[in-house]
Amino acid sequence: MTRILSRSLTALAALAIGGLAGTAQAQTMPPLPEAIKSAGLLKAGVRCDQPPYGYKDETGKFAGVETDMAIQIATWAFGSADKIELTCVTAENRIPQLNGKKVDILIATLGITPERARVVDFSKPYRWGGSDILVAKDSPIKKLDDVAGKTVIMLKGSTQAKWFEDNMPKVESLRLNTASDSLQALKQGRGDAYTHDAATLVVIAAKDPTLRLVGESFAVSDAAVGVRKNDAEWLAYVDASLDRMKAEGLYAKWIAKWIPEEIRPFYVDAFTKPKPTAR
Image 1: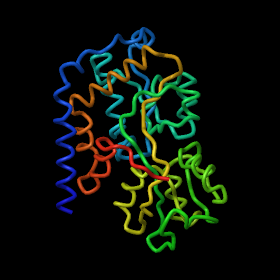
Image 2 (image 1 turned 120 degrees about the vertical axis):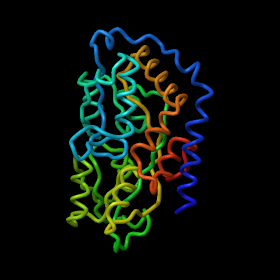
Image 3 (image 1 turned 135 degrees about the horizontal axis):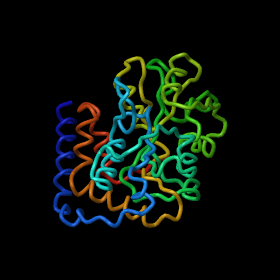
């Protein structure tokens, strides 16, 4: 455990220090689009059930790494962290919320896929994310192929749902709206496994000794910010914001803020290491 924590702290330091050399040039931001500027605040769609990226804490406040990213963009755009309207979005409704102009931006565990790229524009990636499977500790499921013919719980509109459609069509799926509903369904025995972003499942498994991860990564994709199609000026501003976050060491700050040390290495890798090869 000491070696793991040391590795995490070393990588965090590299993430923070490595970007500082670029801080000076990162301070220059492109013009804020007039449509955003005239609104006087940023309307951001974030997740509310996916710690540590986007969730609500025990007091009901928005929390998480991606939530802080959205707040930081608003701060740079308007000079105040209060100039933001945060909206909870789900895997299923986040793109309709964006294209319906309910929000201006999605920072919501949004993986880059060809299907999504047809309806939204993506920023440059800021991290990668893989998928995993959560099962009961005494489950006979030991690897991904073991779920063949079984019921797998997944979120509607998720990367995992699409992956299973394309790669394991004989799996029975139970599709629900939120991570909390999915976890409850697994605990109630309504499915044999629950698949989701590994980042979310790592947190759950660390807190619940009755559950375990299968530990076989699949459906690995880059995560990016989503904006409406053909808004080049806004996309340029978002990309510049992501560059500045990295240059000023803010990702390292937020990882340390929101993620416990014992599971931090997984998330540090997602922000600092190349995307791994997986099924």
